[in-house]
Length: 360
Image 1 (cartoon, helix red, strand yellow):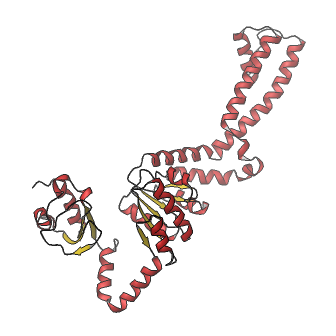
Image 2 (cartoon, rainbow, N blue to C red):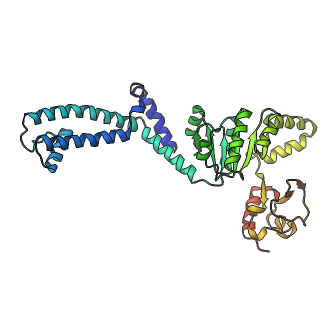
Image 3 (cartoon, rainbow, N blue to C red):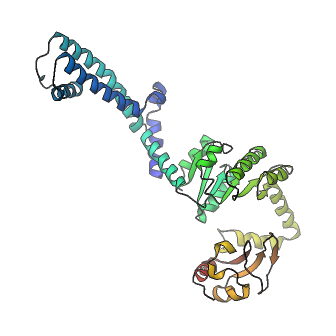
């Protein structure tokens, strides 16, 4: 895909002058093909009607006339045949000028590569399921997608800003995107909202995020929706609209800075273990629905996670959404509950392998 992006960009610069002279809207491949076949039929019909040619002879005479190869006529033409051929040749000059313009526009200017690229993106999106839809590729959207790329989480970006779309096209990563207004039903449907697991509304305006949340909730009642909010008054509206989580970046930033004053050591430690670039420590959530059937319904003590993997269960989320810190060994992994696990990358990878092969 990066190669296609490079070809598109270079070809756009090479032929900017041409796109200014000839509007792309009148240069259509289907129309060019239709004109060519009409031109062919006109020639065949003309020779059969005016010169009484058989179909094969009329087809042959038409082809050598169109191609201007200069072969001898099938038979000598009379005056009306000569007049027909003369106007037919002049007509073909215009036909081939148009076909050549279409060819140069779609091949030289790179429209064919654009079409191929967009078809590839569309087909890739249609094949996705259990993915995340990110509405908005601003400063928050970019950070979100960086995280998803690092963790290989499938996602689709929706943004209407041409400059942001160009930055996606020019990036080294194969980011799937849709250039459209995320508040449109059609954009969400094209992004596979019915097959998605989550949606993040990260547009700068709260009103747009409310509209996205409302629409997405109607299109997929089971969708996990996370929305950004700028105004504290919008939190309740977004929750009523159907958002599962509402995040206020400014509030989180202010809380973080204040906590650095009151509890600097604790905050710096948490910042260290959540920084993926300087630390290999991470978190995992073991949800009942996502673990193997052999692990479902078991007590924490029966799983022997710390003994076999080195990872630690530091939290338990019960069925009503309440979190319990350092759950005891009798805590049961039941429907709609999950364990929060802390460990380094080696331990977390070992945990995944351990659970997949677990037998009580």
